[in-house]
Image (cartoon, rainbow, N blue to C red; front, top):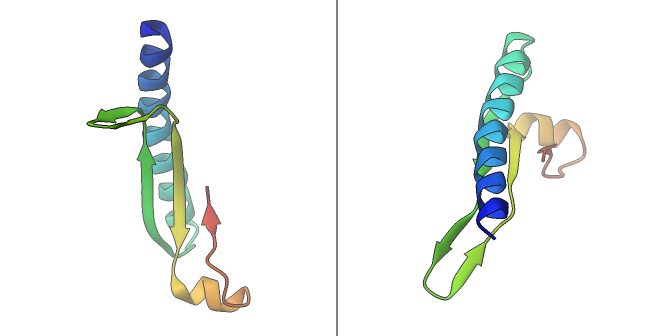
Length: 74
């Protein structure tokens, strides 16, 4: 399990840097980015989260242009 936890932590580290780099490029291309997020494994009383994920959320203007759906890269 320690190897899996270490791998998840490494992936979370890279996910944070990846979504930040993608968001930076999108902003340079004038794509309106609202938020960037990434999370990795954590443990709290009664709960363990082992997934790694990241995403970029666009502004409401982009959502409206695409029919009012919440959109982004996740």
